Amino acid sequence: MKPKQLFIGTDGPRNKEEIIKTLIAIRKYTLTEKGKFCVIVPNAQSNTGCYWMYEDFTHKTLFTSGSLLYVLCAAGFKKIKFIDKRGTEGFGFIVRLIRNLFYPIYYANKLFWNKITSSRYHMSSPVIFIGGLKALVER
Image (cartoon, rainbow, N blue to C red):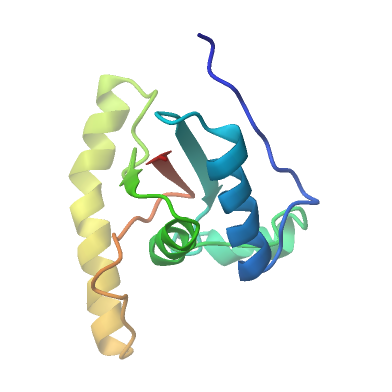
């Protein structure tokens, strides 16, 4: 059976309540009992996260890993798995190697500046810095 594809474009939901209602409708009416749903959204925690909201006006809502997790749980999804957390999927060995080598340095740098500026992330939220958050969700 060929997987169904669903795209919610620029006129999609814009606030938390609309997003949750849309996700509930997807869970109830689109997915089969064992259906899976892959959601890809702009990541506000990425190096260029907020830039895209103002550079490309089609991006109305940005998410952090925590806020995406929140709306998915609020919509009743039980199995949520973030995938391609380092953005290496689809790249060759050398690019994956370089990204995997530099990622811990980037992460340490973020933590250092968070400490200096008294900023923080929610401890329960996965820390993901790539441009797009990707989550595989099961009903």
